[in-house]
Structures are given as C-alpha cells and as structure tokens.
Image (cartoon, rainbow, N blue to C red; front, top):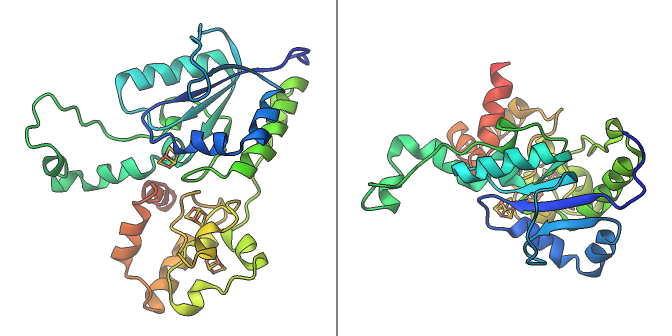
Length: 263
Ligand code: SF4
Ligand code: SF4
Ligand code: SF4
C-alpha cells in the first residue's frame, strides 16, 4: 500500500449497543473535532445525517454487539470495505454486559423479561472477532477518550504511510500502574477484591480512584495471572470461587478465562 495523499476515509458504525462509547468521542469536544480534521468522515450518525454510499474505507470503526442478522451483515460489509477495522468498547470486543445473558440461559432468564416468547429471537451474544478479523481494539465500558485520541492519531499516521504492520499496540500493563501513580490506597489492603492486577490498564484507574473495585471492563492482560488472583481472593476470604466466576460475567471476562484455562 502506498502513502495516501488525501485524508483517510473513515466510518463509525454502531451495531446493538448503548452508544456510550460513541458519546465518549463527542464528549472530547474540540479535541475530537480537530482529530477529525485529519480524516474524511463518511459515516457517524451521531454527528451527521448523510447517507453512507458504501464506498471503500481506510478505517472502519465498530461499536456494539453483532446480535441481529442485519448487524452481522453490516459488520461483514464494514470489514470488506475497510483496510483497518477498529473495535470500540467492551461490547464489541468482549460481548460486554449483554453477554451475561449467555451464562444465565440455563435459568430461562428470557422468561423473566418477556411474558410471551412467540416471535422473540434470542441469539447467543458473540463478540465481533467471532465474525471478522479485527486490527485494533479500544477496550473499556466505555472507552477512554484520551486513549482514543492518542492511539487513533497513530493509526491515522500508519494508514497514511501505507504500512499496516506498524499499527500501535496498547502495552501490557495492569490497572495498578496508574492506580499507584495516582497515590490511591490499594483496595486489596482493605480486603476488597479488585481485579486490577490481571486487567489491561489505560483507563486512569477510574474505579479504584472512586474506591470501587476494578471488575475488568478492559479485559485480561496478556500476562495477567488469573489463577493467582483467584487463589489470593479465596485465601484472604475476599471472594469465593463462585463469586469470582459471577463477577467475571459482568464484562464478558468469563469466556476469555475459560479459553485460557482450556489451553
Ligand atoms: S462498551 Fe459499554 S459504553 Fe460502550 S457500547 Fe457497550 S455498554 Fe455502551
Ligand atoms: S486498588 Fe486495585 S488497581 Fe489499585 S493498586 Fe490495588 S489492586 Fe491495583
Ligand atoms: S478500573 Fe477496571 S472496571 Fe474500571 S474502567 Fe478501569 S478496567 Fe474498567
């Protein structure tokens, strides 16, 4: 691929989601708009109403779960059109809060929501990379605005240079690094079961800074030691194995942990 002289074409597309990750972008205000000066926006329905004509894209950005058949079609088409496909947020990357449904299916959860099940489709929730290849992920529920600005600028540079092997990577550092830098007292010292050591940092440790435990919305670190965390919680009587498993359902960590354990 040769260096592009014109601004890269991008589209931000939402599947089934709360759109919270897209609102983080809007919340960035002028910082987001000046970053957008470096690209040609083809589709971002929170900003404009223009029809996306389906032309080839340099960067496709997708938020949410591919739940419906239409969602899956939209996702596959976005992948086909895009040189680089970026995932925005925990729902798209890990199944997110909607994935809790998968784990509760045996309990017939749907019957508690819908009195009459006729005509209700109830597909299993699967993250985006079950359907298409993903080039970069912005983790979190929601994503972190400043992190988006930092990495997206580098992704634009990479696309302009035409060397897609140079896409950036988020370093394998735990939430604890930023948490300690902020001077927070570690919640583990107060016997509160914080997942920080095994979770990928970059969120400015927002939860522990507010004295809430990290429940892992950014996903597991490649080198995170899940078994050591679980054992520590058990030994220190912070959390039983069942409570650990239940908590990992909240942001879709549970199936990632199962995959690790089966290797
Ligand atoms: S990751 Fe969180 S904020 Fe983003 S779309 Fe999903 S539920 Fe909403
Ligand atoms: S509070 Fe949580 S994130 Fe902060 S240092 Fe302790 S374990 Fe790590
Ligand atoms: S502290 Fe944990 S749960 Fe909170 S935003 Fe960061 S990764 Fe997500």
